[in-house]
Length: 307
Image 1: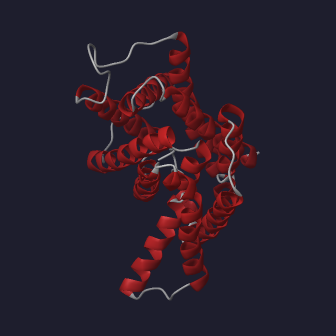
Image 2 (image 1 turned 60 degrees about the vertical axis):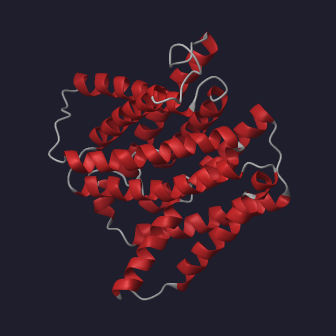
């Protein structure tokens, strides 16, 4: 059952990505951030209020930092989705565990508290080779800006993951972490729209059609369902198994891309995806082994949101 929860979460995140790419034809990146955060905040607010939970927190500064980092990464990821094939953008985003492993290795090497684990070094190095393969079509078609945004998003999301883990170890429930992230996302999106990343003339927000409105609702609902399913999977499942199953999101996003946009990739792109996937699994194994299981599952999962 935990595996099914994780598979559903990966499918829902891929569906959210597909919705973002479709909606990017009608809305700017800041607008998508605003509606993504607003819908998630409203739904979660209603659920928590019904269950008698509270949003009062003793760690406002930690939430502010986590939310600021997460929103920055999410904005870059949405931008990358709008510019790149969905599978490419999703693959780059799934590099976050590799960055976490690289940071842990560099920190241990610098402080001389851990010896070099050369299989991990090989995995991190291979992942960079995989990125060069995956990004070749993007660079060739002058989509390098989207590729750069995707890579930067994965680096920053690694910081967000570590902050989420820290909040969990501090005793903060996952619903509170997700709520403040969603609320900050909405506020940041609104600021971006008012600041100029909105409609070119007149009212700063673009008007809605039935199709566009349904896409926005689908993005917010899919993201929230994915967060809840992922949290459930980490709570009741084996961390290593659940963490590795998240990489099925690359498969689901590839299928969405094939179905909706007819995406086709050369063999070197699929080789790059495979290298990144294998490197990510190796890095996830290292991260999981280096983290006490209780610190991850008793309070909150290490990846309680998509970023």
